[in-house]
Amino acid sequence: MQTLLTNFSQAYILTPAGASQGQFDKAFQAADVVNGNYYQSSGKDMLIVWNNGVAAATFGIQSAPDQFGRFANITYTVNPGAYAVVIISSQAIYTQPNGQVVLGSASALLFFLPIQGA
Image (cartoon, rainbow, N blue to C red):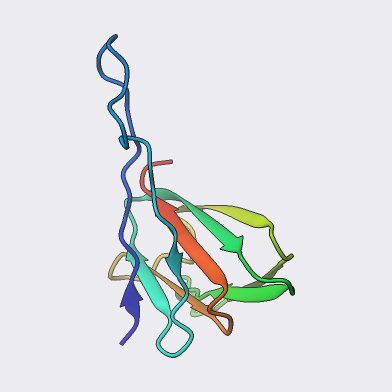
């Protein structure tokens, strides 16, 4: 079974007093190289992928079939020390019928951070 990535809501400043300590802090989660990862889509999300390694590393986003049964899995390589940023909407074929976005990686040095409603 894939490992759930915690869905992080956007941080909003709701008062003129500013933000409290830690309000904007978000934590990346390491890729589960055995089982894969997933998160529950909110409909339009930003996925940030960070390569903490010294070599390029690849991750994948599993597609769901479109109305014609076609698939289009994505594989993307992130350079060492770099970030990749992807916007995934509910209309994209990368959101599964159950609302999950399924990710895979062969490197535990990739870290994921999904942000809801981006």
